[in-house]
Image (cartoon, rainbow, N blue to C red; front, side):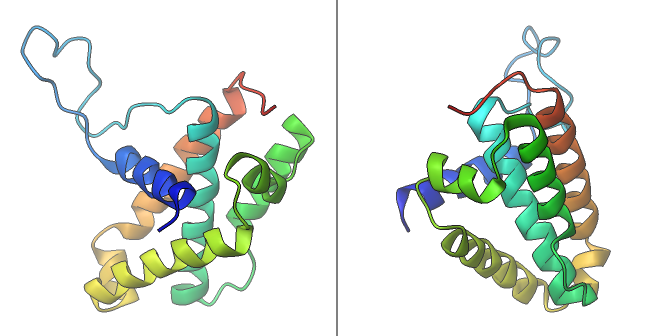
Length: 150
């Protein structure tokens, strides 16, 4: 696995892990257990792109939706806010071809769906809701982010 893909996977996994307080003294300063810690800068935008790709792939595989609704929404945000397409962001900041990134993320989601044995089981176990909530949260953070890709 190449370094950019490993970074992306690590950032995605970190985003989905709950945050726990270490001691009672620090419990007041940490976020609630089910709320992921906000990402900043490039990590936020990278996680947003990856989540959009995963969500769209789920919709293709399990719902028969043939267009990339969420990736297109991210692309519109990037174009209007940064004058940079999502494809170009991946090329510049992740030094990776978008097709390779999509294949890696699709492979991960396929493995996850295979472990759950069906799309219905994935839906019943909350995978779709998790993808939707994660996408919406990251998108809102990216809209408000003052970061600008250089």
